Length: 294
Image (tube, rainbow, N blue to C red; front, side, top):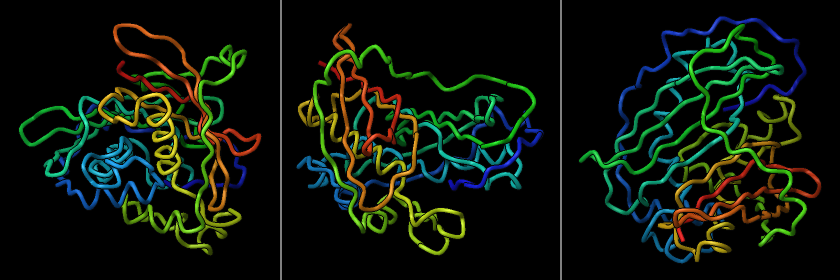
């Protein structure tokens, strides 16, 4: 998804309620060890099992569902406002890890839209299953249309994962330094299947009002996921049960990032962590939430 960077007055737009609660056509994807390894390398993932293609990193879960997740938005929002849409939030609920040889079937639907002061959000739910019907993961995606007023709110929003500011009274349990390589977007695009020109074409990005190409938000999310896995989950993707973020600011090739992790608490064999990823004083991933099986 791309963003319109120039300021604009709020515009009243009618959304199509008939597009809600309607599953899109199923998309099918066969997982290979080579694709798992390519994605890990494209996200600077240091975990050996991911780099070897033995098991997929958590945010690899976006790859099989990429085509399915776009269609429900088109069913609700008119095409002429897509220049104002940004990827607002992503929330993964994991039932099991993705493995080489998996034949996956994905579908998505919009579950609601909400008018807010600065724009309108559309919430989607995405299901990824095996051909046999086993649920692999559920994902909630929030698309945000800047300066668009739908005039009302219909349906439900994606689950919340708000950062508790009281956590800042304590030092984080871990801080991980990370660097976005100059060629990061050119590696991530084919590995993820996301060909959006804002990540690959300097002129297209500048024509959109940006200083240059921007990093994929999900690539930055993948950075945060391996930071959490290595620091508080023993580098074991099988222990990760939920991972959610809000995309707060754009990230650029060459950026130095830092992921900070706080422990929230434990219950029923699961420890909850809050996290954020920053570039200097700028928070680029906010409202980070990770649930890790003990």
